[in-house]
Length: 93
Image 1 (cartoon, rainbow, N blue to C red):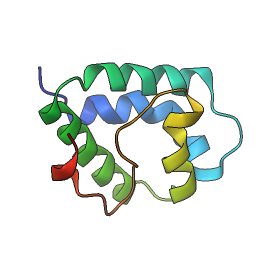
Image 2: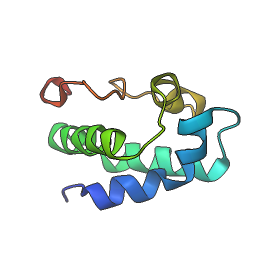
Image 3: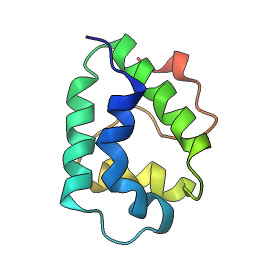
């Protein structure tokens, strides 16, 4: 099943405080990150999730790049790409 942006955003809602100001990553946030990573189990899903993250990054105010890029690692999830506003999602495999 294809991933929707609604799913991506809802999985990461609990991460917003970390994405804006750093500090401790909550268990709820990491559960969302892990779950999202498991959902994105094909190239097309990963590209869709990437595009959703990219548009969410631009539409949600106050997200800081260093926190968005360190989030997956803080949750022990190995993302094959860094979340940033200028990522080329077509290169995500």
